[in-house]
Structure formats: structure tokens, C-alpha cells
Length: 162
Image (cartoon, rainbow, N blue to C red):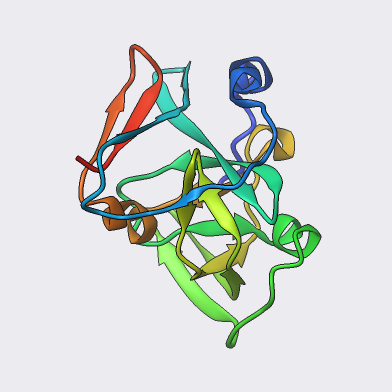
């Protein structure tokens, strides 16, 4: 089991700026003009997290941006609450200092900022951050579709494409 991250007391305050209605979005295209997405950059005990606002089935969901992760994932409780259909069998995984099992789910109606994301199979597993405020991890399987991703930590903006 992976460690439970709960020390981000500033999480709720920092992500308040990311709040907003879940809206329709334009499809993602790697060759498109750069698009900026507001993010929250959190610093705690020498660690840094970037949190991005996604919309899944027209509901707001906060995800950690993890360019080092090969795949994206969502908390299994959030997947159930968002009615994401299961696809395939339970899979086992291992990472740095953790391991477990996950159920693949299909995410079809989702967006990052104003960009609609392609339907994708991602893992659902137990994932806890900020007392359940952050429900997923956005990995390179999604981010690589933009061709280029940059994060301006000082201004709390992620630029996709370009």
C-alpha cells in the first residue's frame, strides 16, 4: 500500500482559486496553440505538488500533475461516485515504495481547463490526498498528448502545447 499523504493543510485554501463550474471544453490537439491552465502549487515540508482542476462528467475533480508517472489514476471511491465504467480485470502494480491493485475504468467525458481530453482507460485504486480533496493523478499518458507541457511555478500556470 502506498503512503497516505495528509500533511497538506494548505490544500483547501490553495485550491479555492481553482474552483469554478465544470464547463464544456475544446478537444485536445498536440499541434494546437498553447493553452494555459491555472494550477495550485503547494509547498510543504520541502515537497512541492502541482494540483490541476479537471472536469469529469461535468463535476470538478482535483488531480496531482505527475509528469514522472507513466499512467493516470483516480481514487476508487471517486470513480464510483462519478459512475466511471469498469473495463477489464483488476491489475497489480508496484512503484517506488508502494504497490497494490487497481481496477481499470473508462473516462470519456473529461477536460483539463478548457481542453476536452480523449476518452481513456485509467486505473482506479485507493488514493488519498488532502482528506479526499484531490482524487487523482494526471500522468504522462495524458500529458504527452499535448506535445509540450510547462509549469510556471511562480505564477501557478501550466501551459499545454505550443
